[in-house]
Image (cartoon, rainbow, N blue to C red):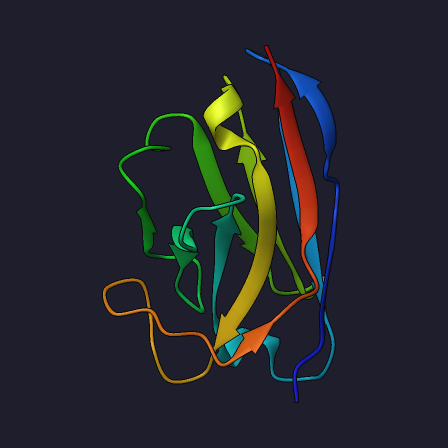
Length: 122
């Protein structure tokens, strides 16, 4: 299976920025769509952003449009989530995910990372 390792989480004040990174194992990274999910305590897991295997298509949750940007570097087997203008409501565990069979319009990942905590203080 694909192994995913997130990094870059931490504590930031409202209005600040963070960039999450996800390093993927294996030789088939470019065959997978990638996405970020998040889950806050007491709330359902939600999809934040998805990017196609080539990076040509993206999709964002309405709550993060204009603030977050997903990107990928297939040469480095890495996907990123740039988070700007962070709000306390963005506080959650963020998970990197991968899918061989789905993409931005119907994303259902088969692989999940361990998650990284993002805390936005007010």
